[in-house]
Image 1 (tube, one colour):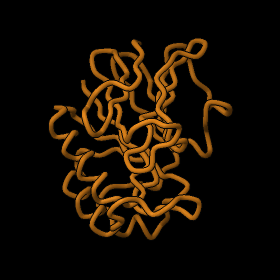
Image 2: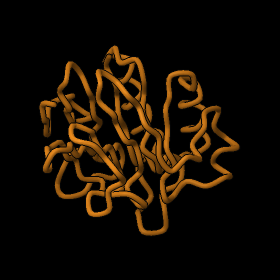
Image 3: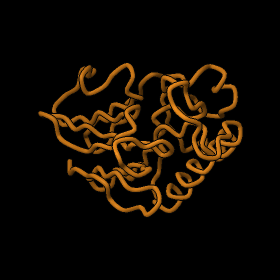
Length: 181
């Protein structure tokens, strides 16, 4: 099973269109959105082509293939525009005898982990910094930000394919970081 991960769109139409284009090209079965979809947030600059209503329309075209969690910039009003649920602070996906714990990263994060078992994958956004690494007996995976990257990284998305967690550049789909499960 291929899974596609994106986080921190922050209402950027151009970033959303690039994410959806890469998602379609990837052959992934599910698009997992890790929060902060429509609003840019008071601490962030306006992202390129800021248009939350249009972002919602674009995402709604894939509603039956989206698993999403709520970010710190998402609100109940955002849910009114979206045809898929975003109000859960976390979700879990089990695949190939491995649990993926999905969250935005503002409630649970690498310094405040939920109860996890050896081999589980903690998947989060929020920091806008990509990560794919083993920490102790769990894996940490952050696809970075599709619209407002930090730390000198490019805009990015994540993939889980054949037991490999990989963060890829949104522009060139080149590997930024990766880890094998």
